[in-house]
Length: 285
Image 1 (cartoon, rainbow, N blue to C red):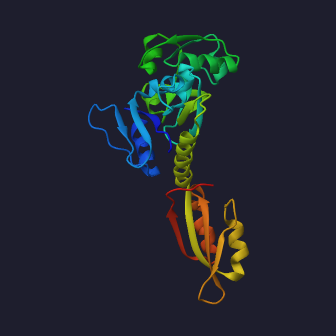
Image 2: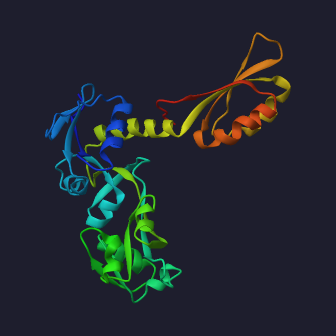
């Protein structure tokens, strides 16, 4: 019998909903918790869920309170917790960027040398600046980092940015990116009981792989088969099936979703017809 796995999930914030959606898409059927409920279970998988702040997930995993957890890569680096990144989840993307007021003469990250920089991520910022050989004074602030230059607290800021709209609203412009972050599944370093967490990693990975792919089907004359298959950005060989109509075949292939925009008109120009693209629920390479 497989041991029950404990998984920490963000209880609120930008990672909560997509994390919950990923679990549902994986088919583990998580039990929706009631208001203020901090624990729940998965109905058809041996997984116990614990709802905590995303900031606390790295420490809970490091200390063995839970087997695995979903959190942001930036939170792991900032809290300097010793955990193993098992899987990048493909959502919650943001970047740690340096920014200055629009009127500032700085044009690159190197121009931050000797400046006062406000940030709510001092450990990650210090590490990134040190890697670039930039010496600067970091001023730790708890929130509203973007307003620091206007208040005279600092010359520049280093903060997490998703779209950049907050920077523009506050009269700032980016100088460069210091760190890229996204949601990740993490596990405890040195964990010897790996079966349950490896199964979770595989199932979640199958959903993430599928989201990035489309199942492509089309018919084409055999005389154009070599041309159309040469266009297909597949890792393996496509499936080719003869149809009742003589000289025509059906082609089935799994292709990256990002290629569809350019691929469909190219196939049509080579005589492909009845072209269909279908979403994929799960894909295990």
